[in-house]
Each structure stands twice: as structure tokens, then as C-alpha cells.
Image 1 (spheres, rainbow, N blue to C red):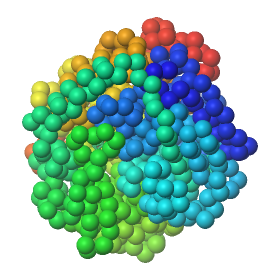
Image 2 (image 1 turned 30 degrees about the vertical axis):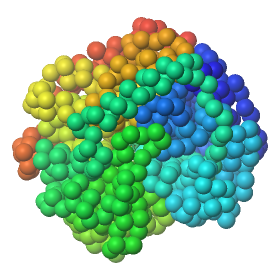
Image 3 (image 1 turned 90 degrees about the vertical axis):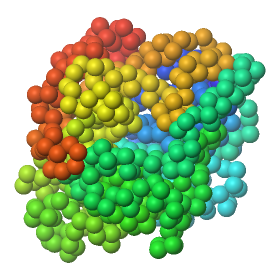
Image 4 (image 1 turned 120 degrees about the vertical axis):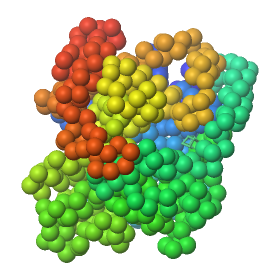
Length: 612
Ligand code: SF4
């Protein structure tokens, strides 16, 4: 099939058996690839009520039709499973090179089933697929294992790994690739750990069949030229996401001390300029990227080399725990990467524990004798290790802030910063209604990447509570996951460099040969969005509106300082936003897709078959 590897690789870890199945053209037509394939397999193959960390759950790794082609940034791979953190849908993508390698080996998805009884890694070299013993790698860090497997197999192999966090089933363990890129959210690494799968190593030497190579070359040349001539190119290339640090503080959206406020005192020391001057050694890009946002850094203070810290890590490990030295944040970042835990959830959990300690909700009895002081880097390092190893207080924090607030109680639920059980990522939103709604309605929980709507709030007015805010969130939720998580290409060339969306339908046609308008593609994205919502309804008892609210802090506590001082969005305004959103989505007042909507999306039969 043009544009695709052409095969689905099924790996049963119980029986140690592999099966290759031809890619169903109907699946490619209706779900495109990436997270589209992921939710289709998850919904149709993982039984209702499956234990996320049991053998019934499946981990599905998928490339997309643009992955590994000449499209700028064609290096994104999606991991989908039932989330051990939220109990609902998890989809987390990683950049780098493995998605291209997987296509060159002739596969679009790997479906990992069952669970092994001893540590293994999956070896793929074109048609040769083997499960190999990984006993000697178990217990080692993600970065260490990637280096070791490259030494054993060769530099041409692309590798994903889990660290001790994944082995110990930390609910927000990640899957690491390319020495610092992460499929970080929702606990995909814990699911891999539950299967006793330490790593996947892939080498492919085939070509991707392309419908119209001449047209592909022509359109991709234009896309690269447009990226390079963008006015935003130089700043993006120079600072990557760290360029956002100062801006986020200036607009008052930088998570500070467990989202207590939106501006960190001393934030200037974390700016992209300071980071570039102090620790950045060179730039680092994903497959085929013209605008490398990755920054390869060296901390002399700790003698470590690392990709990052990127914005989210600086926000959650830095601002949220009140660290203001970029080298401390870089070391904490390195620890999280090596131990294989998500920096966003980790920074959130540590900030939450620090606030609980400050308020006397927990004492040194619960903290293994540690004084959890804001801004204490040594405490942050110790807690990261404790979380990954599930030692003492780390065992509580390894379950996420929702769980920790239930254990510690005493009103801590009011400032446990999560949506649907997923810790909120890097944007304080009490003065940004569209961004707040984006968190409320993100299909994996409190994550920003489906709809980064804060710039819309700034553009049209941050106080406005109007139906267009819901429309903008829906629009972004259709486009952003379509490019990044279905096509298998990076969306940042569009977001940051203003690449024209009009390129995508023609280049998809040149690659696959299928004529699809941009509207057709958005429809597919909407179908996937509705199916992910139905998955939540199927898996989480009583799911509906009550799961779509932000944490109480955001609805009740005015911002204490910064440009948004005094602002918050009360529940009645959140309800207005939810009503507009549900209505525009074609969902009922409880946020459930109606029968008519499912019919319109071509999902009714599948949903009924899937046992809603
Ligand atoms: S912009 Fe960044 S994330 Fe996107 S492809 Fe380039 S290096 Fe990767």
C-alpha cells in the first residue's frame, strides 16, 4: 500500500509468538495511522474493564502515513494503551527516528499483547523478528540501555527503552528514545514494564512505496523552503521550546509552586538565552526536521549530558518546585530520563508534596525524614529517585497526585492539580478560559498538546467567556492530533513556523495516492476524537461532565500575583464553556456523544460491537 509499511506486527509475550498481518486498507482509509490505529485496536481488542497493568491490556506503537517520508519533521510515533494513571485512554507520541525505521522495516504498528515471565527485548531487522533475553538489562537506566543496545546491535538500530520507573510500574513511567525524547504521558512505560519488555530495537532497510514521487519531491521542497523562510525560524531554531520560558512568565502562565501562581520569582535565570549561553552544546532534531527544537546540553555542575531541558520540564520541575538554577533542572531532567519517569507528572507530584508539607498536611513522618522545602534541589533529586524506586513517600507519589491527595486528605484534594487523574502540564490557566477548557476536554487528561489555546485567549481577550473559545478548542483538537499523532509528523512547523496547512492534503495524496480534501481529513480526526471519548465512557464508571472539571484551585482560588492577579474562572463559567463545547461537538449535556453523532461518524456499529 502506498505510504505504508504494509504490515501489522503482533507480538504475544505470553507465548513468545510473532504474527505479521497485512494492513487492512479500510483501516488506513478510516483511521489514517498513528493514534487512529491505536484507538481502533484498543477499542476493538482490549476487553472492557481490563486491568491496565494486566496481560489483557495491549501496548500499540504506530507510525503514520507521513512517517519516514520527505515531509518536514516526519518522525512521530504514537503509543496507545489503557492508562494505568487515569484508567481511561492513553496516547503519547515520541519524536526521533524510530517511526521512520519501523516503516523501513515494513511495519505500521506493533501490537504488544500478554506479558512475559522474564525480561525481554524485541529485536526487529526487516522480516527478522525475535524476542531476546534482557535479564542483564533489567534494573538499568533508559539512557544506559539505549547506549548498550546500540553498542551490541549497531548505531543504525533505533531503540526505545523503559527505565526502573517502568519496571516498578510508576503510573507515569515513560518510554524513552533517542537519548532524551519521551512518550511521557499516561503511563505507557508502566504498561511496557508490566509486560516485562525492556526495549524495542528496530532496523529497516526497505523503501516506503510512494504513489507520485515527483509530486512528493515538489511539495516537500516547498514545505522545507517555507519553514526556512519563516520569520520565526531563527528564534525557534536557537532556543526551541525554552524560548517559551520567559514569555510564559510574562503572561503569568508559568506553573509556580504547585500552580499557586503563574509567575516565578527569578524566572529570568531560566530564559532560553541563559540556557543557551550556560549549558547548550548543540542542536538536535528528529527525523527530517528543518527546525531542530532539541537542545543537547552539558551541565558542568553535575557533569551530565542531556537533551533539554525543554519548556515543560523547566515549568514543572523548575517553576512548580521553585528551582531557579537551570543546571539543577537539567540534572533533575537527566535523573527522570535515566529512571524513565515523566518530568511533567513528576514535577507536579513533588510540588504537591511540598505544598502538603508546608501546610502541615504531611510531616517528616510521611516524608521519610525529609524537609520538603520549596526550591531545595537536593530534595527534588531524592524524591525523583524515591518515586522511580517506589521507596517510602515515593511509593505514594508514584501513583500520581489524585491518589496522593486521597491518601493524605485534609483538604489536599483542593490543590491536587490534575484532570481525569493526569497531572496538568505547563500552563497556569486561571486567566485563560480556552486553555482551561483545553485541559478539561483533552482526551488523555490534563495535557496541553491537543489544543494549545492560550495564544487564542491572548489574541481575543483573556476575560472573555464566549462560545468561540469552545469552537477554537474543537478546531485545534482536530488539527493538532491529526498532524502529530495520526500523520506521524511533527505539528510544530505549523504551530511555530506558520507552515501552511494547505500543504498536507496534497502531500498525503502524493504519498498514498488517495484523494482526500482537508475537510475529509478533519472528519477522520473527529471520528477518532469521538471514539476516544466513547472509550472513556466504556471504561470509567459514571464517566461524564463531572470528569471534565479543572481542579478546585482553578475554580475557586484567585491568582495571588502576576498580571492575572485576582483572576480565576468560577464553576458557573466552566459550565457555560462545557455546555458550548458539548453542543458544538454534538454530544449530550453530560458530554456523551449522541447516537446520531456516532452514526454520522460511522462509529455506531463499532461502538455497539465493542460493548459500550
Ligand atoms: S520541531 Fe522539534 S519536535 Fe518537531 S520534528 Fe523538529 S526537533 Fe522534533
